[in-house]
View 1 (tube, rainbow, N blue to C red):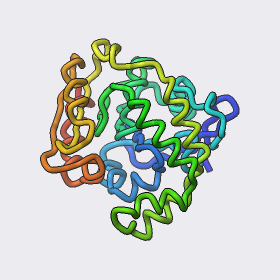
View 2 (view 1 turned 60 degrees about the vertical axis):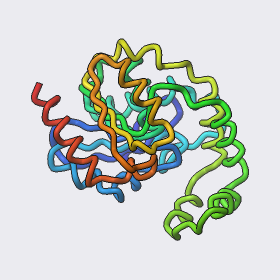
View 3 (view 1 turned 135 degrees about the vertical axis):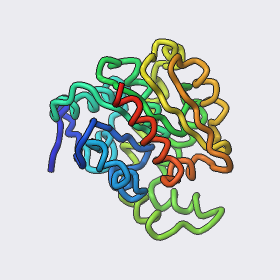
View 4 (view 1 turned 180 degrees about the vertical axis):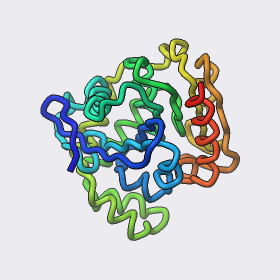
Length: 254
């Protein structure tokens, strides 16, 4: 299996398709397979070279349990390690939720590697501490307790239950503990001058923050998705893919 190495951490990646490079970054607790299952890879691989990578703590990448190994510079380093392994100098980046948050960090820390950004369901504001504390408590309770918590409102589909059992929750709790001390990135947004497409469901819990972020970015377009919440905004490929294709056609031609 293909891995890039950042220090002692192995980062799993896959490549599909041909064309201008597009790095896809998923949300917290996800993995590469989720991007395939939602249809983004099949929809874009005829026009782009798709680079998929598992964040540390996720999927087939290494999953340390030490919060010190999940600082934001480590995660940015994982992305650059994959790019360097593939000898890719610059790329378009697409991230949703947590993956979108990492896109802002990339724009701050390695702007010279970025052609454009596509960010869904995420503003540049740091998550509130109480939200991260809640996630840490949930993850530390383990997979069975997580399922029981979610099923207090309605039963989970079997595939969702199966995915929950694939995660290493000690690693995910360590990541959330590290996120508590991520430096704010919102004040750096005026310096993010690359083309940026923002999209989010109007019922997304972070929609107002995303609007605020869009006003601070010098070269951003915000597309709102009526009637969609955070989960549906990420999975509605039939709505989102045409937006992505139009945006990439424009920025890759420039």
